Length: 338
Image (cartoon, rainbow, N blue to C red):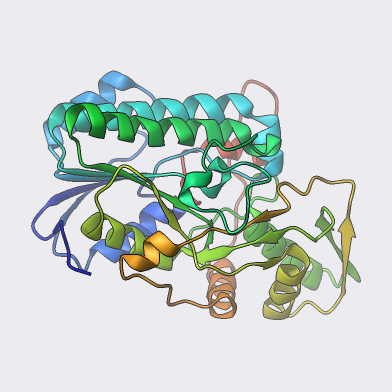
C-alpha cells in the first residue's frame, strides 16, 4: 500500500521512550531518516499540563508517538487504581491537547486491547469498542485509554487533526518489566520459571486456571507496525495491532519452561483471577494496510529470555506513601510495555 505520510527529515517525539514500546520505536525509527526527540520523566512530567504544553511549543515536533503510560498486570491494577486511571488519563489528555495546539502534523496514540469488553465476540474487531462491560481487573487503565482514543477522534472531527490510535495486543520483548508484583504474563512466567530452575523447584505455580487464551506480539514487530500505521493510515477508527493467533496460558507456560530449561511440573492456582477468557484481535484492518508480523512466538521468547539473562532484574528503590512494597511501587514508574 502506498505511503501517505513520510517521516524522513521530520522531528518525531517518542513520548515514553525509555519503556519497552518506546525503546523499540527508537530502534525502528533509526531507519526512517527522521530526527527523534526524547525527554526523561525527571525533566518532563507528562501529568503536568503546563510542562507538556511548554515542551511541545519549544521543541515543535512534526509527529508524535504517544507511548507513555503507567502499566502493570492484574495485581498492580487491583492495588493501584488511582495512578492507573489518573496518571494515564492526565498524560493522554496533556500530550494530545499540546500536540493540537502546536500544530503537530501526525499523532499516534497507543492504547491496549484491554479497552474491549470482557466478553467481546472473538476475534475482536475495532467496532467492538464500548459494546459491553470491561474486564474489572483492568478497567482503570482501559478507561484512560478509551478516553485518549476518543479525544483523538474529537480533535479529528472538530479541528481536522490527523490524530490516530492503535490498540496493540499483549506485547513482550527487550526492556519488559520482570517484577513479579507488577509485570504482565510473559515476563512473570519467565522469571518464575528461571527462579524455579535455579532453585531446583519441583513445581511452578501459574496464576489462575491456565485456560484463558491470549495473543502475544513481539515489541519489535509492534514498533514496526506502529510506524507502518503512521505512514500508511489516516482515519477516525483505531487500528488493532496483533499477530492474529492465540494460545492458552498453560500452553504459553509450557513454551516458556522449554525456553528456560525448566523441567518441573506446571501447576495452576484457580483461586487467582483469570481475567478475560479470551482476547484475540481481528487484525484485518492492519493487514489491509500491507503489514504482517515477522517474529514468531518461539523465536521471540528465546530472544527475550536471553535479554533477561543479560539484564538481571533489580527491585526499584522507589517507595510510595501508601506503604506498598517496592515491587508494587515500581508500577508508578512511567514505562510503556503494552
